Length: 163
Ligand SMILES: NC(=O)c1ccc[n+]([C@@H]2O[C@H](COP(=O)([O-])OP(=O)(O)OC[C@H]3O[C@@H](n4cnc5c(N)ncnc54)[C@H](OP(=O)(O)O)[C@@H]3O)[C@@H](O)[C@H]2O)c1
Image 1 (cartoon, rainbow, N blue to C red):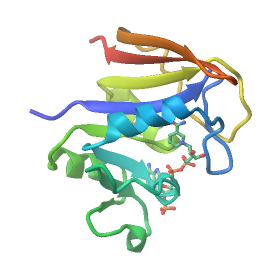
Image 2 (cartoon, rainbow, N blue to C red):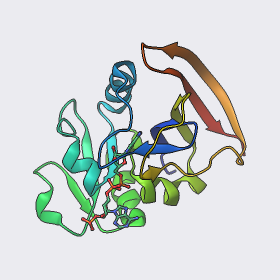
Image 3 (cartoon, rainbow, N blue to C red):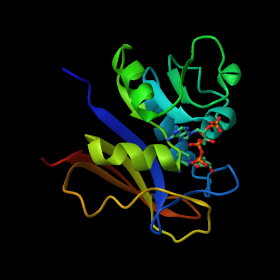
Image 4 (tube, helix red, strand yellow):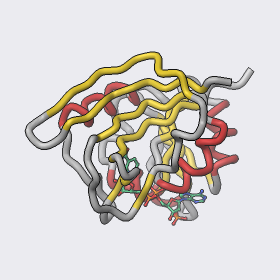
């Protein structure tokens, strides 16, 4: 039996997730949530995310990097050329599968995702990368926490695919 596909994302109300290769918001509580939830997992991610995320190899994470530049991936990481290859590699590794973006990877995995660990940031922010529309699919919210800092209000939620 294959392991469930989990997507983890922090997304603004207008679905923006990135700007100029970085996050479009700086929310310490969300960063802590992301690091906690991805520790010890198989993290499937694109080249830009991999190059920016300095601690990807820490905390027992095993990255599966989708790229045409295999030489950038450090020892202990895996290289895939596309999403199907990445998912096949991830299925064969121990640990939960966490899809960590970016845009194309979310677009290609959302249709078969089993769960979204969503941080919805209650703001419209400018950006150049987006999470695909998920609200038209059927989800069951199994956990939710409202929070805020000096700059943003945001909601953490776990959405399970209702099939
Ligand atoms: N808010 C969040 O939760 C969140 C999460 C993730 C990312 N982000 C943001 O999103 C931005 C990065 O995402 P991105 O979409 O620009 O880049 P990305 O997916 O991290 O990297 C893009 C590169 O990955 C490879 N790639 C990605 N999808 C592929 C596919 N389906 N098939 C084959 N190769 C693929 C290609 O690498 P090669 O060029 O090497 O072939 C492509 O140039 C940043 O701003 C980041 O902060 C935000």
